[in-house]
Length: 418
Image (cartoon, rainbow, N blue to C red; front, top):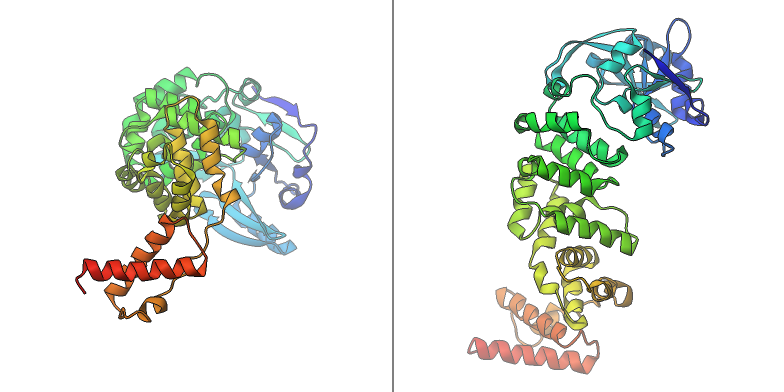
């Protein structure tokens, strides 16, 4: 049975790039609607971001109509009915209605169709199976409207079957629940996820990474992660111990400091105790080089930051730079078990706002003028001088710098019996 509801405020259906595409593809025997997340978000009063469009028109007709009005078309997945139209510089993804002939993961065989209900029933979750026509009417063929109202994430049809079609749907189940659900995860979907968890071994690391990082910044990330740990899913994803307490504390710290949710900070709190954990997570999730560097830096002797005085904190800030200094401090705070630690950690984390690391004033030429030749010895002397400069709290006075340079040369010659 089809249910309908009228959207009261949906200018995005008639204006902007998506509205123009909907107008283009409606009429002359064809219909187009907005589908999926945009409709769900509009019903929930959330920001409508990317707008996907489904249509009865076959890809060739979509391309023909776009060409007639001067829109560029890109065949991003034309074998599966998807064409991306570029309107006013913005991409709008258009997909012809489909019906599954065979289902085996991401390589399902499909044929194009004209039946909105059959297209809806091949989607993953009820709240994602909704479509909205250009007049603002929401069409529900799968029970999505009451689930949107109750913030309940349910699979369309039998959960075990939908999961077997693509095991990434296990992660999507928890990610969508973390973003849009309330209360405990749907029991049938939860139990089916446990039964199907072995199938996740065949998923690519890149797809898992994408879903996990999205989950970690969702409003319900902590509860969803706890449910996944209890279901034995996080061990399969991360390949090692995960730490729910530090994740919860990191989320609380972000709220205290007014920081936007950060997926890598939260992943570090969840999975990093030592730098070896960063290597494991990078391999398991195929993290980018920058993500790997961030996690590796966070995990490097973070425990030394507890109880650090400001002089030593300045040395850490100088060595690490602002971003990595703050990330390591945040991980140390998240893993600190004390309950009365907020003021101390806030003071340390705010150091870059009070103090800007100066540039080391001594150069290679200063030591070459003192008789040190180019080569490894020169680099060693520079490092010794920089350490001494830091230990003296970054002085910039010429006479003090001169003393540091002279003492460094004397120490180097003594150590090397020069």
